[in-house]
Amino acid sequence: MAGAIIENMSTKKLCIVGGILLVFQIIAFLVGGLIAPGPTSAVSYMSVKCVDVRKNHHKTKWLMPWGPNHCDKIRDIEEAIPREIEANDIVFSVHIPLPSMEMSPWFQFMLFILQLDIAFKLNNQIRENAEVSMDVSLAYRDDMLAEWTEMAHERVPRKLKCTFTSPKTPEHEGRYYECDVLPFMEIGSVAHKFYLLNIRLPVNEKKKINVGIGEIKDIRLVGIHQNGGFTKVWFAMKTFLTPSIFIVMVWYWRRITRMSRPPVLLEKVIFALGISMTFINIPVEWFSIGFDWTWMLLFGDIRQGIFYAMLLSFWIIFCGEHMMDQHERNHIAGYWKQVGPIAVGSFCLFIFDMCERGVQLTNPFYSIWTTDVGTELAMAFIIVAGICLCLYFLFLCFMVFQVFRNISGKQSSLPAMSKVRRLHYEGLIFRFKFLMLITLACAAMTVIFFIVSQVTEGHWKWGGVTVQVNSAFFTGIYGMWNLYVFALMFLYAPSHKNYGEDQSNGDLGVHSGEELQLTTTITHVDGPTEIYKLTRKEAQE
Image 1 (tube, rainbow, N blue to C red):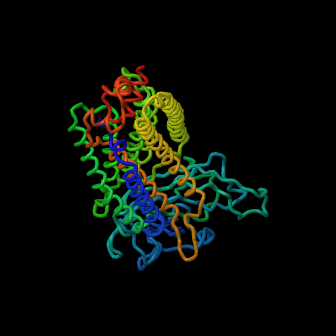
Image 2: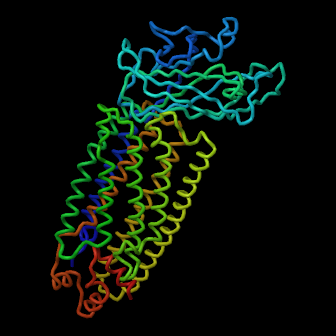
């Protein structure tokens, strides 16, 4: 009697394996919660209003907000009036990072959001559907004495969504509008030490450019980047997990190929899941420390999408292979109704990501949410993906119910067996159901920890110990799915325990009548596990 390791391993050894995996899972959460800092940091920047009185406003000269070569500055817009400084001569300058600091490749990415401070004026109010048009130049350098090198130069339009809560009367002039923050810039790598932003608000009344946008007093930015300490912990985890999953994947497939029968669909899908997990584990991010690879964020999204699409497909096929009849099983074409929504949803999210981060590879200021058409298109992709996800979970819940009903129906034949044989199959069924519950628990933990990380402040303090909840979420969930895939490949690998028919039946206390019954219900069916064969024969009958 041959089967999978999960069926032939003794309960004691199985508990030891489960305990070891649980210890590693706890370590994964503790690494993020106690060792790693928070995943990201947010830094506020206040722009400095520089005066550029040169003709034609050449973009070759960069205006520094501070330092030995700082620009000619004004404190506020009112100061520009007596000096006869026009709006087109004002440049909002932002140096990244703050003085006496440097950016690092360990920060991985930079994301900026923009906040406009707009004062209310009776003769210069914000019009309906107003749009601010910014002329933005981005430069970098790696030495404080070096010249700036242009990195990007774009016209950046953004729609204003502002409200004024006070009555629009003369006594309330000077109060600020309440405006929504605006997406501004995203860069997929931090390859340089210093960055400089020069933002102009060109006014052209004939073309209605920057007319009816109120009186902009200041431009504030909030920069978000990944913490270097968290990056190092994350890289270390990926470097450790990559060979671990790869080795067990090779070991698993070698055991499959040594069998006399060809691999069945379920075994192929488990192997594909291991490949996708290995693909997401490979620490190619190490190269981002030495190379300016701005496509790393997009590449990371694609890797995650492939893994989760494979994981969702595995759950469907895993359930289906334990409930379908002989003609439909072991063929991927039999799952097109269930796998179809996964493919459509994944494709929609991929197109959405390409429309956002794909375009940002050449224009870091681009955002699909800044135009009405782009917003509608993005929402359409997200809604379609959400509908596909709902359909998927309906399919999955139905199939899980069918599998448990199928196995429960088969349990009715167990009382006719001998006590030892009955206990053997009851143990196999319990292990199968336990694995199904562990799968649901992993999915539930992912959702729960995501919600907790969103509603908490990012860290908890217990006495003198600070626990970084968000970091624990990332490292813990990442470690959990690695351990889940590891456990699947290990437990569903073919067991080396192959018993002779007489020895097997003798050990289990099976008499001739029971042997005939088991032969007609369980054996002579190819499959990775006895539960697989049992449910397959049940469906066939």
